[in-house]
Length: 58
Image (tube, rainbow, N blue to C red; front, side, top):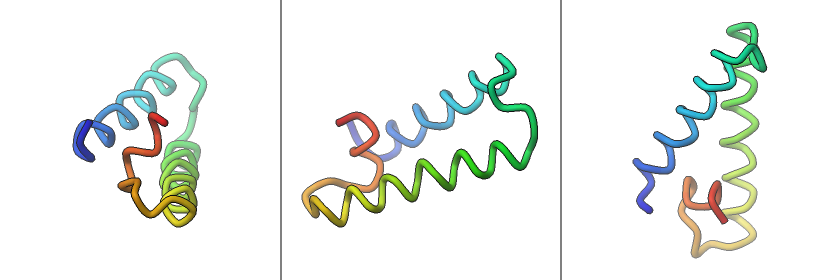
């Protein structure tokens, strides 16, 4: 899966969570995205072979 597809899947999950009231505010959307991207970055540092978005699905 390439980075574009992984990013698309992450955004679809955020949209789904918003539509199902798991995420209720813009601030929660932003914080969720920051958390997901930060997690991706930290996993990438621990395994440089992963791309930033690939780690979401490992």
